[in-house]
Length: 85
Length: 265
Image (cartoon, rainbow over the protein chains, first blue to last red):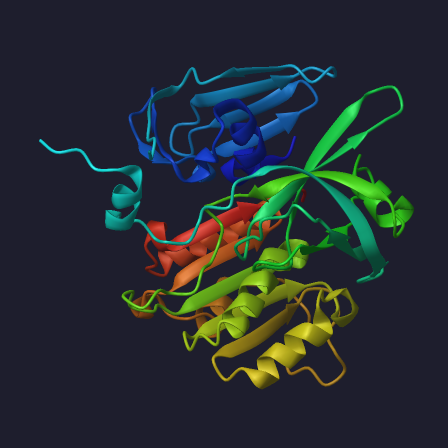
């Protein structure tokens, strides 16, 4: 399984949040480190896409996409996300 | 307390006046497709609704099979600026799901679904008047040169005097993407320097043997950390992670090094 990074989440984030959050600062629930989503390590498989903290490998966010276009999105490991209004 | 109208608020804003380019879905028509290297194609798309894009951004291509199955992949954009012509350079991954179709089957006149422009992190924009310009070091592994080529071209188009260096690790001279364009930019632009590292075979008169990029070559061919360059690294994951580690060891600050991984080996 190939390791990618948070840059490739831009399109999915626009679809689930309505904006490109790759530059947004996110805090990891597991280790408390924070940084832009673009720096997350991302693992994409046919079952789904997982973004992990580059410092502690904790799961930050997951996307599961069905063939019919539905998406399940969770941010179980992000305790704060920077939102620019 | 007094309230202000939205127009007055907009006028008083300290935000940059450049409108944010909103990402959305577009229908593109293939204007041209031709070989870039023996494994890659340069694909030019006409996208009438395209809002323009910053140098370094990417887009998602969505293919839909007759049975409704969809596959989406991200591709860096080789073009930048306000136009509605979008240029991609796609390297075929032999076991890929989307790139073999784009490289072998896509013909001028065909239509594609695109989502973009995407990616606000791995982009370069010319320094504004009140910004202190910083040198820029671009480091490419293979097809990772695509967004970095867009940055070098945008730098030239902006007549920006900031020092730019591109260090491009590539298998052989025939595998160089945008070979003619890079040579033209480098000869026309005193502020741009392009250095090649050939990993499998060099040109005939090359002073060094073929081999992978090393820490030592990086130290001699890249803008030193003391100059506080903005560094952009793009390529296969192991390449990006090795180079980013060497840069931090050489004294570059983590926040000055922006990375984009293509995956693969």
